[in-house]
Image (tube, rainbow, N blue to C red; front, side, top):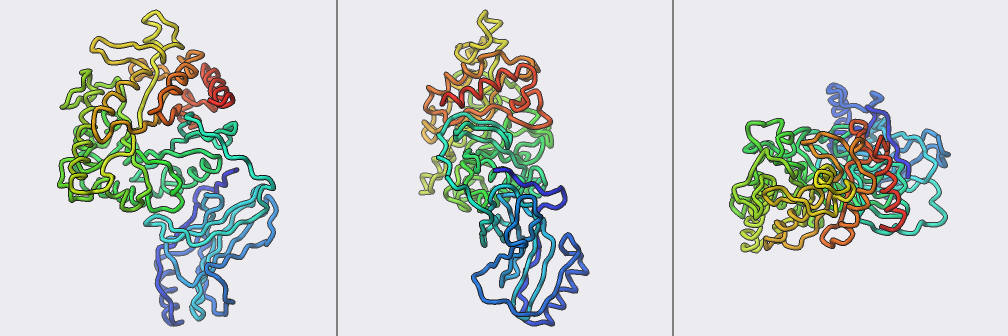
Amino acid sequence: MRALRPARGERGLRTKWALPLRRLGEAALLLGLLLALGIVAPSGQVILRLGPVSDAPWPRFAVHPPSPRPGDVVRVEVIDRIPWGYILLTVNGEPAALEQIEAMPASGIWRWRWRFQMPAEAVELAFYRDCHEGCRLRGRLALGDPEPIPKPPPLPTKLGLVFPHPERDWKGRAGWAVELTYARQAEDPDWGIDALAARVARDQGRGLRVLVRVDYDRGQTLPPPGDLEGLRRYLRYLERLARDERLQGVYAYFLGSGPNEAASNRLSPERPISPAWYARIFNGYGESPIRTDNAVAVLRAANPRARLLIGPVRPFVRDQDGERPSRVNVPWLNYFNTMVAFIDEAARARAAMGQWNPGPDGFALHVPGWPEAARAAGYPEAEEPRLDLRDAAGARLGFRALYDWLDIINAYPTTRGLPVFITSSNTYIPDEGVPPAHNYPRGWLTAAWSVIASEPQVQAFCWFLDEDPQWTDFSLWRGKGRLRDAAAEFEALLTTGS
């Protein structure tokens, strides 16, 4: 289904006022106040009209023209008896442009008008209210002719992509999509909640299951340690995501990515995100079990069906260590082991008080390949995922670092056996600095898939990434350089049933 994207600056303006109007005098005063404050629709109009409106279920929809053709500019009026605040109209998940607000207080009626361009296919209009707390659905309307023959449901696969291109052909497969949003940019036109909801709607329309990474801000994956105001802001955004009815189909959320890496702590380089602080944010480690200012408590109170994953630690990075050494004593595994131990400890303490589901629902993992390690050991680079290569300390190198992560996950009571989702994989190793467009060996993705296909604890295997203009050397969609081979292999794995 083609996504509709209004021009920048026209995305779903929300009204931020909602007062009951009972008398004309009150309406006139309110209108004067709104005009004085400049709270108006993009057209600059707030119209006060008197007159009857016929009885009908609420809200009422009116479409002009009533039978739009592809390419027509369509105007949709929504009429309701309640002057909702923070409103939004979406068209196939994309915000429409709000043009006009009309008050009809004598009959207790409010009217809103939006516009959009009619696509070739049928559309679903959805009217939402109270979007500042998480959009709540008020009414829907189908427009256009539905498909005469419903498509068969796609078959599931573990294959997935970060930022999948909207025109990608998934070959009838229900794969995975990884999307990203920032708590400190909640209203951003590209990374805020409306942009996320539009991408989720597009992904789900193509049969994909969606994993959402929630970062605090660009370059700062989680709130800086000790920043309680930042923590409150982050948790409020998680709560808003969980409540938003546009996002109820999200498969799982995961908190941040690479907290052990200095590049993920740019707002507070002198205060890196420690394992204890990550566990504090996740399920309240180090605090009284009765406190609810943590991600698990907030998300599950807002939406008991929402899944929450522990975010990925970056392997082969020595920026931080952990105070509880892993069986294999290297910094990235020590960090991960300490973080999981603290989350397990907090979960068991809360479970002892009778709290429901106080631990994670799974793990997001970062599992990159390392073709150069295979070549240095005298093996073909493409065979690296199948090779048990290790450093002097015994840590697995390359793709089979997956099994070091699993060893730690399965060592603790509350995390043993939980599903894992590889939310980022490719052939880039920061120490070498060579992107996949220049180092991808033909056959690597197929070899990695042979490992994943036989590992039941792994639910998703997502390549980073499909399409983003800033990451062309990683993009499967663009297929630059050696990535032509990777793109062809991904297509083949989808086609052969993977």
